[in-house]
Image (tube, rainbow, N blue to C red; front, side, top):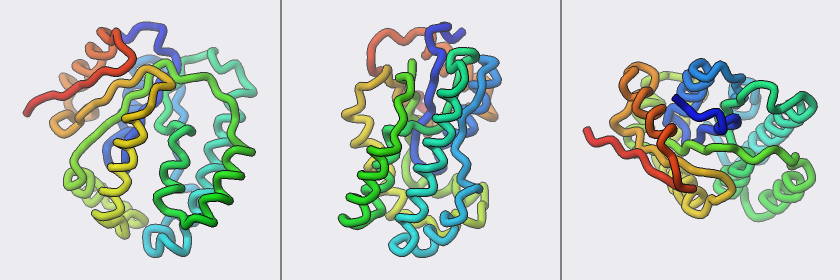
Amino acid sequence: MIPSKYHNIVIEGPIGVGKTSLAKRLANELGAETLLEEPDANPFLPNFYRDPQRHALSTQLFFLFQRVEQLTKLKQRDFFDRPIVADFLLDKDPLFAQLTLDNAEFQLYTQIYQHLKVQTPRPDLVIYLQAPVEMLMERIHRRGLKMERGITEDYLRNLADSYTQFFYKYDAAPLLIVNSSNLNFVDRSKDFELLLEHIGRLRGPREFLNQAA
């Protein structure tokens, strides 16, 4: 059983790690509302995967505006009316921007980000999912989304490294780092129950879940 103090939970991790699937299952378990990224709504994303250098700024700004709008609508309601499980952390948004934009574009993005960034309640818990790049690539290929066919292993490796660096320093909320290599939270109930039990036992500001094969 997850303690009631975890009212605002964020699931994070690189593409293909399973954050949205876990967010949906966790929300269902808690009777919570989901706050999810909407990549299908971004008209620039397929072009970005084909030609990142040309379409990075438009793709990044669309996602920024989208996420800020979602969080702004959330602020206009009673945030604590129902538990929330999200699959994105706005504080992490500059990570993608710095990885994909040139210096001038990143300076422009940063100005817009600082201007638009909304004040949101601090998450009660952030769950950061990790997996080897080879496994991420396999999962991406297996789900077969047309717009993701252009994702390269080099891009995914740089992204995963950026996540590692970001969460190495992250201390804005309690953090559970999960090696999901041998865990399947959607198809194996025992894995999901293991995660719930681990969350229920959390005590420190940073803990790890690493299940051996």
